[in-house]
Length: 160
Image 1 (tube, one colour):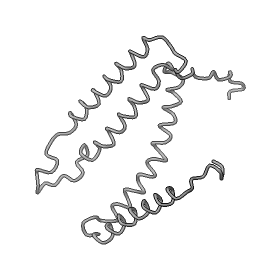
Image 2 (cartoon, helix red, strand yellow; image 1 turned 180 degrees about the horizontal axis):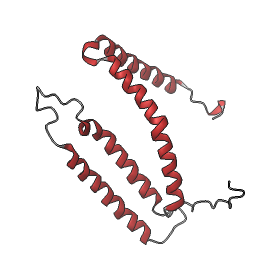
Image 3 (tube, one colour; image 1 turned 30 degrees about the horizontal axis):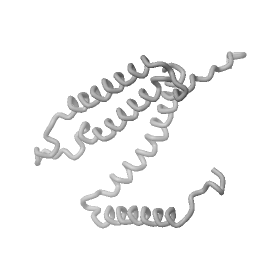
């Protein structure tokens, strides 16, 4: 990004100010109600999320993308990418209930269900739909708008 491409203008700065105001309001509420919100837990969660993203998630996505481009045919690649994206979103949303975060033995009406089987049903529906679309895309004739095939790597020399 060059200096000419940098965001600017009144909409950008107003949006930026509003967003920072919302962040400040959230941090203020976190600190004012610290007995209920336990700021140290939030700080641990935020730092842990950043480390998890940078050490585990980003390399895994990079590796999966590399494999996906090399192995999956171009016509079905967008469908598989979309299915994987929805799978990750479902798992991220379901993680708190799957791990029982917030469950309280004094109040059995909080998270009363067994959410594992329901999450598996949702993921099964996502994958059946994704595979159905992939089969339909595979069976049709290629078009000019299909993604290009993976580039061929030159042969390795001297072990590299």
